Image (tube, rainbow, N blue to C red; front, side, top):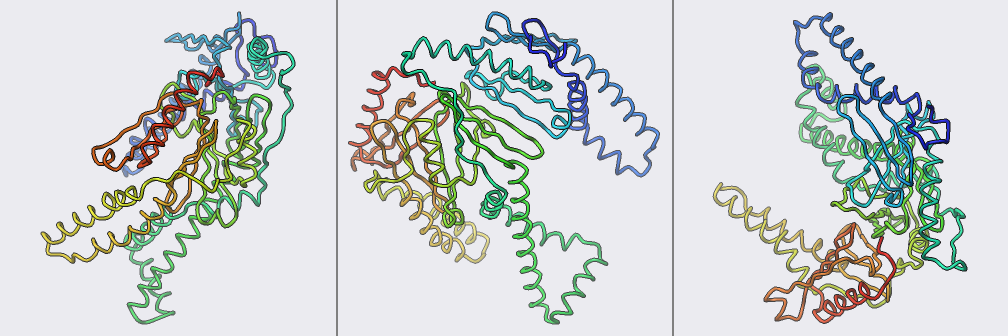
Length: 495
């Protein structure tokens, strides 16, 4: 049955385009598994072209057969409020998910799916890492029917727990829409240091690997500028630095447009919806009840433009991966506040005058671990090797400003319901969690911390672990007691 029909009460096959999707997946798996053999064959001077075409024809024939059989044996249906997906033609597999257990339904489209107007539907529950079920070739009508039935189950559960006078509406409200200018700003203000260093190292090393005729060509152009060898070396290094910066910024801009083109963030009464992507288009629905933390980050360049990158952490039964986090770049402070207000009814973007800062010993410990100890090790190694010993101590002195910045940005503040923890050194990061989302809290004290009336606190949610180092012991224990009180007295579900 085609996915154009909205009747999915009986086992239903996906869109016919699913055969093309399964064919592409088969070819991709083959190339991924056999690429070393392919590379060796391409560099073999005695290779036979007929062998290559024969192997390619066999791979294509097997992929076509696999795609057809996979498509014919892949069905889904919803019966008795339960989604059942059957797949496999050699090893049969059946997965059943109660609609009430579904946490989110996400849509994705690669460029081929966009051409034939089909989608990959990812179905997430709280007990899996990533998507529990993927339906890689659904038409929009079938997707809307699945979403409708899931919404009916959620509405029924909400009706049982919410008074009639408090029933939420299903209106959709926009939060932000990134324009091409916004994406350009995101790409330009990205953190380029790591990419620039890697690109610069590659360009410097590339010169030594160039054929002799190209090295002569480079030297000829440098000779037209200067005949002094030292000046030529400086010019080449400067050219490599400029090239690394240009390539890094250009790559970041292209990546921003590819991943976040036409990004739209909206919210309803119960969820956030994110749509974005140029080559791979995606639509992600994040229920408010699944959101565990909201993190916003800014580097010095973005601070000048008032931009933040927002990351939304979701609940997961297993350790959450970065891929499961919802990333929203290029937000203003007002838009960050709108996201927080939409999700939890409050915003903590504006920092109060009084905050709880980590003790200055946090800065000292950072300097000891990352500044002094590496310098001592480098000095010892240099002494044994009869090398210059000054560079290790230069590093120890140079790390002091980083430790100072990290200490100044290490604090937290809270109100009756929400906590915000700050961290960073060059960049500045804040993470916001409702205290009722905390599933566990631990207060640790070393012998030295007990003498100084200090402690370190770890807050555990279903999607984040937040550490508050070197805080006053009285504040740490008060925070623990208050969080436990909220966990016992608050009857609102954490997810």
